[in-house]
Amino acid sequence: MKPAPFKYYAPQSVPEVLDLLNEYGYDAKVLAGGQSLVPMMNFRLVQPAVIVDINKTPELSYIEPHDKGVHLGAMVRHSQAEKDPLIKEHAPLIHETMPQIATVQIRNRGTIGGSLAHADSSAELVVVTTALDAKFKIQNQKGERLVPAAEFFVGLLTTSMEPEDLLVEVQIPPMPAHSGWSLKEVARRPHDFALMGVAVILTLDKKERCTEARMVYLSAGDGPISAPEAAKLLIGNEITPELITAAAEKAAADEIDPGSDIHATAEFRRHLANVLTRRALEEALQRAKGGN
Image (cartoon, rainbow, N blue to C red; front, side, top):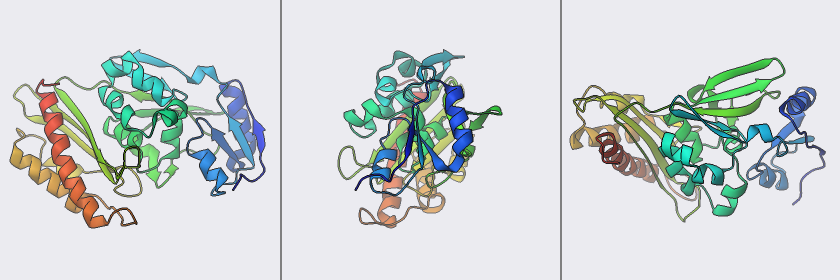
């Protein structure tokens, strides 16, 4: 199939983009890398009357250090982030996530902002930015605002953005000292969407007691699914193998809501969540203790 007819605009600045989004509202879709939007248009799952192509807006493509964290423009390609030394230094979880996203060809075209705005619950960046407590800078003609990742993703393929809004920047905060990270996932074939995955962040104090724990799951519900009750089992304690097992079992049994489909049953996805959580917690703990 081919897309339904549409008007095409290629603005060359963010103000021009915002003018078009304000004018056309729900009738417009933003084209960044096109790795999700174009296939959906080809199958006529979406039929926008207007396409606003933001590939000619250079001010949205940058990677900058900021207070030991890093800020990324929404048009940064996955492949740029994968190779950038600032990402490797200041956002190692993002750096390690990139090679797990799709294929080289898709990473060469796909953008950070596009993946996040699409809000697919099986997308790695969605769960990783949530685990990192990232903030998203959103602009419209009235101004700009910062939205925490936990408030940005509100449902399946749904964000808190309004039709006139544009995601312009992703802000990754610095991780505290003695922090560890991990992303574990399982797919049927390399480069497929994951059947289940989890991103983990752990922070320890000087006595190696856990002061902060985040576990965020992909392919486990309608959005990135956090496991705060499982995290509570770890916080305030020295993390032992027994605690890791208990937290993994708690998250898999009580805090995720995976569905069944032709690829895997909900029961199997819960099993994967249990195993992957244990592995991710073990790796994050080792890194938090200095074994990066």
